[in-house]
Image (cartoon, rainbow, N blue to C red; front, top):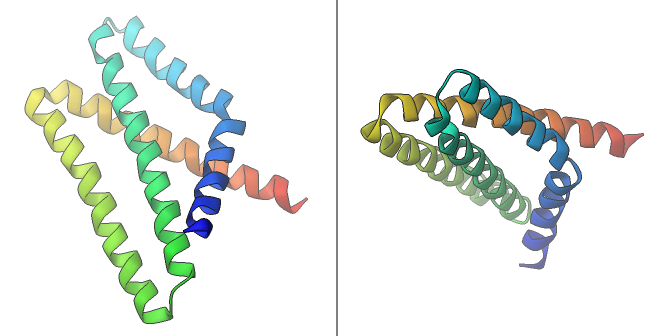
Length: 131
């Protein structure tokens, strides 16, 4: 349990250290929506960002659990984790598509943009850590 907390603390510390990048991404997405006259979709940007945040925390927890397990069990943990994370993403987006197509598109694009920015931030933090 302590190792799970350590891994999640490490992922959280990357998010906290690089909060300016995420704030900038959210500001750009929100400004694009405001300039297009779609102020009501700014909440979908927040939904996409939060979905991305919980996706990465879940990934960190599953990776930590898999590293402390034997190989066959680790494979099972990773497969179940993948299915749970994808199910979470699809559930939130399915709810969004039932509310409005525009809300779905805004949440999906926001999740994708924040996912890519998270990959960038994590890769950047690894490069900084190695040098």
